Image (cartoon, rainbow, N blue to C red; front, side, top):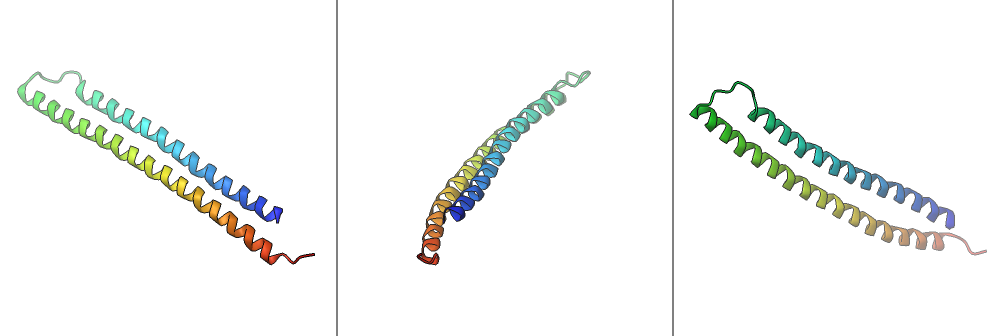
Length: 114
């Protein structure tokens, strides 16, 4: 029975590690995405040679509003995605605990007594 449980533990631990790696990648991607939005905003608002007119100011104000909304939406959406992923990992861990118990009971029942 120990071999079956050892294999099960190895398999589920590998899957948990994959899930955790994906969450870490998502966290890194979130930081990079928000940084890219900020850099893009700075690039748009610092174009050399823009005329100082009312129309230019209006466009820059609209860009400011739009980029601000994109940044806030990106942060909010990625935070919710991370919470969901963390919840999935927690649910997976609970399910695997239950499945391990079921496997243990099945192996005990299926193994003939010596």
